[in-house]
Image (cartoon, rainbow, N blue to C red; front, side, top):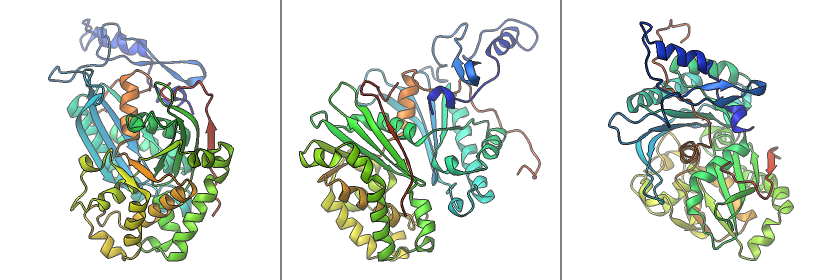
Length: 419
């Protein structure tokens, strides 16, 4: 799915600009934001503002503000930032952030639909996001939905409800687009002296792996694969949502290896690993949690985890300790907590499968990914985003109230993941 195809459509730009010029009493006024005009085949293309060059500035005049919402199977995350043009290592400054466990994919594996309870939790979280976006006066917004919404048969009804209740327009992205955007967010962690990289994201509903060429000025996605092995769906399938038996853990490890075996063989990844030409970067909650536990942090601290290097031996020591604990004991650990204690072991099993299939001795840990990639690409003008803030919520009545299949994309050698 291309960015243009998945961008939310907006009303006709010319009529909107005319209304703004006339103002409430027919008096001319300047255009506030650029809109979008319909393109061919129902897609949308950016329409230039008559009076403004670039996104609107923040209230304090310090620069344009961008917002990125990542709605996953387990979490709803928001990041609001403005560009920091003078710092290459820190390309933007975070203005506000928000994250909440919503478990949107709860029960999806059994019913094929998003449950009413899960949608209620998610809409409540998105309402908070919308309020923060309005408060910070973000002028460019992108909100993406991932694996749970890709699988749900009632996604169209859900996305309509979200827009009506919050003003946020969700766009559905493919697993391959998700992997490419995630790469943009963590590309600064890649070591250019190692010619290839495996970047993996163990999410709530799926796991994405990208095979990366790091030899050019900007890392390029050579191929990617997304499989429906995620911590929420696996926790529901195995272990009754709380515990994971030894046999179930081992089965997830085998299924993970099997799901990526042909992908690995097709691209000669094992041989490249043997030659010492491959680095691995993990961008998921699983790997950041394991890293935090390895550091014995009393509570999770992003500043200590993001960018650190963790040996596979160290990761497996943490995993073995977690496997020896029961759910209550895992929930007492500061880097996990009650809300995620049942999801840790399924994620660890997927991680074990990836690191046994590809025996790279050391992992780079990234507490960054989709939101950061979305922000960077919007700031570079390479990604769709609404040019208006979510409207205030209208008043409404209470009534409104085993072998893993997957998708693989092989990119042309000259393709840039940021395009």
